[in-house]
Amino acid sequence: MRNYTAYILFIIAIFVLKACSTSENTITVIQDAPRAVAVQDTVEVIEEFSQLNIGVLDTVTSFDPLYAENLSTQRVISLIYETLYTLNEEGEAVPSIATSVEISEDGLEYVMTIDRNVFFQESQIFTAGLGRRIHAQDIKWAFERSAHSGLPPHAAELLMGITGFENYFLEQREVYDQEARVLDEVIGIQVIDGDRILFVLNERDPDFLKKLASPLLSIYPSEAFNQSRDGLRNRAVGTGAYKLDRIEDDGRIVLIRDDSENRANRMDLPSINRIDVTSFLSESELFQEFTNGNIDLIPELGPELILQVLDDDYSLLPSYEDSFEIVQHSVDRITAFYLHEQSITPNEWLISRLGLLTVEDFTIMGNITLQNQDFQLSEEADPQEQYFVAYTENLSAQALLNEMHSLIFMPQSSLAFFDIRIPTRRTSIYSLSSDTYFEEFRPLPDDFWLRLDTEIISLYHRNLDGIQSSLTPWNLQINNITVSDD
Image (tube, rainbow, N blue to C red; front, side, top):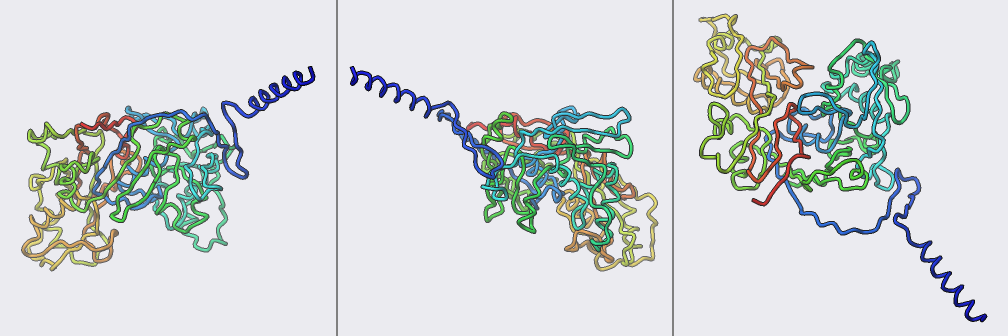
């Protein structure tokens, strides 16, 4: 009987131990780490690998959202980072990192609640390399950083309506002695708690939420700047669907889908696992790689390719209809040219020649506006050997300048690019670029003498599906795109 009782107790002990050692989820808490790791039963999921190859003409210059000044950089930034709000197909602001907003009756106060399930991507800038949960302080820090000296002003210009932002901006950029500064924050941006942030405006702004959708106002962690002076220039830490894997020696950027538990718990992941973004020096080189099948998508055709593959009504030429597809977006690229008023170069002959130009002189496709009616014709002015233009990567600007060089300068003179992007005392002409989205909030100066509005058109192979027209030129709407083997 004693042996039988011992045997029963032994069997019970085995069941107790087995019950204690198995569960559906075992939570392992990592000391000083920003999140807990859940160890779950392994379920084999077979997913077909999908890769998208994108070809662009503008160089991707930085992974810091504040430096995202060309559309190629903005397109990459929008895959890695997120903003408080985004725009839907109707152009309405809808929450992204934010989940809701309460607006006061006078329209001056915005209390935003953010999604605390948002995590920054895993990175060595964080403890143990694990992604940190977002905090309202991250938003305040990122927005105030946009006002700091030495940084492009374009993001800050979208925030000027916030109470105290302009004063903070001017002090940061014009009071060089840091000890003499009296403002240590923007009083119109206040963190209520980890989930909520308050914005106070100087006056009503019906477009305030739309401005927050700009990729320039992407949210990123301050830790990236605590470890390196370069910050995010050559690395990226965002909350978006993709993270930077590497930059190849040839400049190709490799993005991989963020399959971490933090991201998967928020929303459905895109079907594309990897995105390669390659910059090309010429449109002909890009198109050759596209026709060879090495590039799947060209988000924006340059002026040369528009003439090569499209008819006058912006439809594909018959020779390409069976192989390629296009989508015409609801937004234009804007290129405007200006005379440099502070130039020390005698420009009488130049102005006289520019006054002869007509819209019909140009072959480039797009809507051209000329404001040269008041340019005085001078018969006595002598041409300079060269007239200098501030450098630009904008292919539309380059194409127009090349046409002008042939139309009015040769053989008496020539146009030449300076190797600097801003006008100098010897510069006669400079150009500025924008698009119809930013033009609504930050219009280009209206004293241009020539302006070109070019429709943004994407070209892609027929094995891609889900590419849609967009009101925001940087938005690739990657969640809708699928790639087949056909």
